[in-house]
Image (tube, rainbow, N blue to C red; front, side, top):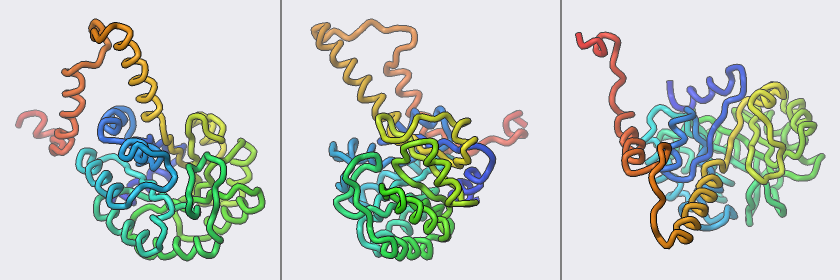
Length: 289
């Protein structure tokens, strides 16, 4: 199976598929220990690669190179990639989709924002005219071979949210995302409007959407959940705490504890990114026959 068809099959299976937002190779290495699917978060990548907020600074060659490195280290994980608005022009969006599919991405999310863009849970978002977005989306859908495509709207007005969600569900996009959904009631309303089309829900700490478990999301008819920033925000807190403690200790490293991360643990984690490429032994090979 191709990467796109594998993710498509996973999403259409019962339950809600979780995809964990990663922002660099190290966070992805840790996420791979716990989940079989990753979300290549634009928020996290902008923060990690540029040290800038997620308001449109990402250049498509940088994102493509990151995905190539991810696929090289994680040959069996799902990789859903945030490509924002397709980097403005439909031609660039199509080129990026072709390039990502060749690089081994499982799917992409294409939004209907116009520049200057914002994080999906921020105020001040502006959206393209629906017909203009649909034209770009249709070109992307015609370009992809088997890549999974998530159609995303960032509309904020209630009538426009439902109008756009219904229009996105009527396309050949595989999944629909309404970002920044503010309540369970609105998840239910969007679910009704998109009918049988798979639905994606985006959770981000401090964002506008309610915090819901995978069981709760499955009960609401949500097929896939992306967690944009758990790695990034956890790293922020952990690094800040560690450096504050180091400063208070006059630069003396803390005594090693039983569950501490040191050179050995870090090296073992990263070494697994090499061994994942080794062929899985058959039962006959495993028995040493």
